[in-house]
Length: 422
Image (cartoon, rainbow, N blue to C red; front, side):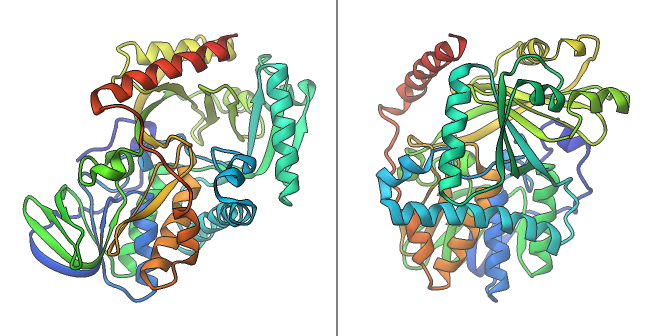
């Protein structure tokens, strides 16, 4: 089950072969999905003394966990004001605190288990238009109101010293956001989980689940009987649970990686080495790799189809911002699906008293998967208070029958693209 042909896969640490599930086994908890959510949940449960089995359809980190932009972003996809409107001021504050705990958890997991994944802090939200600067200033004010003091506004002159493009009017620097090698982070979590006794079966696609009083997951070659079941497939869960699938939509996101450059030339593009994203609705995000490549992402798609000229399209966009890379070739091009929700907030809940799920991180999953795993483990262990705060966030199904959901979303996306262009 090879990973997408990405720069991440080309620079991934060696991973042991994990055989498929064969036969019928039992475990305290069975987790469907070997990405960040499933792995962190497993680590947290194993630390509480529970036996855990993970069933992964492909390979550890095969989905969004091993393909994403590797950017660790503060908070949620929505501002605290929107969240207060859904759950009230007190729970909104709790959710903010949990999102901050997620970043601390991520750092602690990497330190505790010695995960080599190029973790680096520092992040820049870049403004292309005056209204972006206004929006970023408002965002900073909201963060300061929460007691978050790791941001500062930067003007045109300073931003040119941070990134080698004339495209931006300024931006918001966040010292509490950052970047990592996403696939190596996932692989490191798997090793940590196995060290705690977790069993991981790759090539073990779950074809059916029983979510009753004695939950069970079935593959083509075996089954796992458990006391609890956790659905952690996110955009790749398929039709195992139609009610929760209806509340997320897979969104394609894509990245190119250039050829290696001389160190001095690569470093001049982003002297500080921070991760950067603009604040268009259809955003572009990029960073410099440790081996002196430029990793440039964007081109979100809701159609379910990849553009045939994807590599060329992303390269053209990159050259709009960095024309000095015109003579540098593109060596890697890859993509994958993340799951978005209607309100762009993570969707956590229960299918039944024995079956939990987490999905729909809407672009903030590198960090938020950590806290999702922790609160699921707490709930399974009998302390559901923090899990239930997430579960109180209201979520609606995407409108329309299955065949019309994506076309409707594509039309909506065209409206936001028009706003970006204007």
